[in-house]
Amino acid sequence: MKTCIKDKLRTFYSRFATEDRVLILINADPDSIASALAVKRLLWRKVQQIAISNVNKIDRPDNIAMVELLGITLSPIKEVDGVRFNRFVLVDSQPMHHAVFQSYPYDVIIDHHPDTRPEAGFKDIRPRYGATASILTEYLRAAKIKPSKKIATALILAIKTDTTNFERQTVTEDVRAFQYLFKHANRHLVRKIEQSELKPEYLKYFAYALEHRRMRKGRVYVFLGAVINPDICVIIADFFLKISSVKWSIVAGLYQKKLIVIFRNDGIRKDAGKVADSGFGQLGSAGGHKSMARAEIDLAALQPLVDVDNDKKMLSWIIARIGQKTGSVR
Image 1 (cartoon, helix red, strand yellow):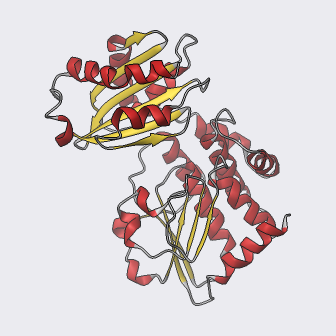
Image 2 (cartoon, helix red, strand yellow; image 1 turned 180 degrees about the horizontal axis):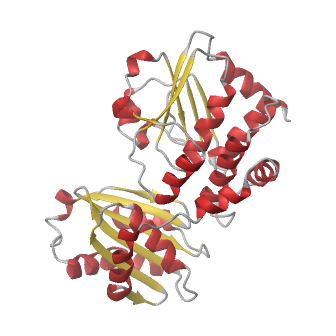
């Protein structure tokens, strides 16, 4: 193990004392859940108390399956009394990524997203990495901790999810982490969790998307109207990208007074993050990676520009905003 990670581990441990009560905050998805489990294992028997709290509602079927099948205990942030804790850890995210995160002073931040220069006693932010789980695997190995089957399964699932099975941004360290975890994980559970993607109530959105999609030179555009969960847009965008002739998949929906736009592409000379930002950055938050991105715009900002109650006009407006952008990057 490189001296660098051992130094980081020592600095990490220096932030904690035996009497500390630690709260690990996450925006729950496979990478954040697995990374939080790894931090909890690193601090086992080294602090007085450790809890993992999610700021979002967990309603994606695969995330629910991960929590239930691996027996992971999470506490929704609304049920947590932050005063009971004196040390705070943030993994797979940074304070500016969620309003709730900004309410806490962090002793440790470990993440793989672009560095927003957050304040913390100790930071380990590596945007090159495909998953935060890969970083935490290095910490476990540096601490000479053999991961339990539960932790190894969670970490390997996180790496597979955040790298899209190594199809998107990945570095050698992600591969090494995967290889190390492979022999410790329950691969049957990994497959079962990965296959738990759909709820019966999602099927109507597939039917609507198939009937109302618009195809333009290898690009598929869909506006679903109001959705019960924004992850439906993600699932359908990924679905359309499996069609051989589709190079771009752009799926939008309305959720909690916001327009959610999901971008997916085949990764060949394209940059979804730039397209999302150029199309919607001036209206709301937008950005992401080369092959996947997301934009969110408050409906209040849209109402002067388009009839948000007319699905056809909304779809035409979305196409007009980004059609030329996708075309400019092939």
